[in-house]
Amino acid sequence: MGDMPMHAFTWLIGGIVTIWGIVGLIMASGVIIGAVLIYTPGREIIGGVIVIVFSILGLFFTAGGLLLGFVLGVIGGALGLARK
Image (cartoon, rainbow, N blue to C red):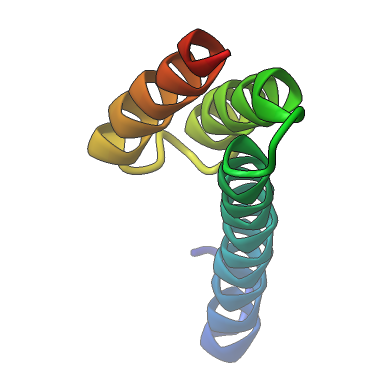
């Protein structure tokens, strides 16, 4: 690591992982809010769109994310759109 002290490098990596974790929680919260909206009468379309958008954003902004969660989110959002 050159002249960088080891504790500074550990702190830097820990900060990046923490930020990715927070972004992942935000994306997951968006998917959950969209899923709740799918079951609210009259809001199925907006809920489906929110689930799809946050699933796609979660895939890109959380360093790949969990591919299974992305696939299930897109399928669930599509089913929410088809529910209407």
